[in-house]
Image 1 (spheres, helix red, strand yellow):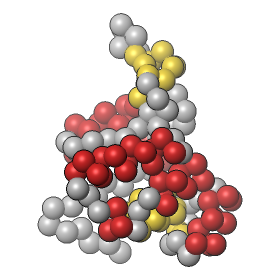
Image 2 (image 1 turned 180 degrees about the horizontal axis):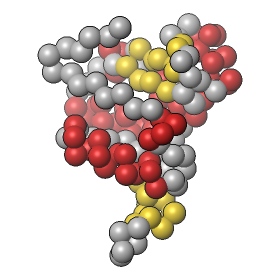
Image 3 (image 1 turned 60 degrees about the vertical axis):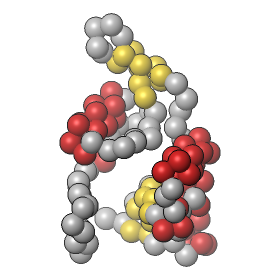
Image 4 (image 1 turned 90 degrees about the vertical axis):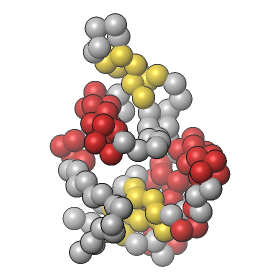
Length: 130
């Protein structure tokens, strides 16, 4: 069991309950709540477009944050903030995040797709299923 350090926060989220896929409105709603609670310096995600009435249009606003784009954003942010990615962690369940996982010194794979599980075994990355 992991015990957080003095300046760490742990939030346990059931992704099946909290996060939708693609343009599902719950994804954006959960990100907004996490932003309010954690007050992070930066969140990397695909943003949804919202209409004048505040409801999701079902369209993406800006660039989709996936695959190489996610890796690009994280590397750029790390460079600006002088973050050593060799000492950083990344967690994923999907093979689309292989570029992101390759960017850090400590990739961790959780409940992966078949493709990501095979990649993790091949590269010796920690793999957890629950």
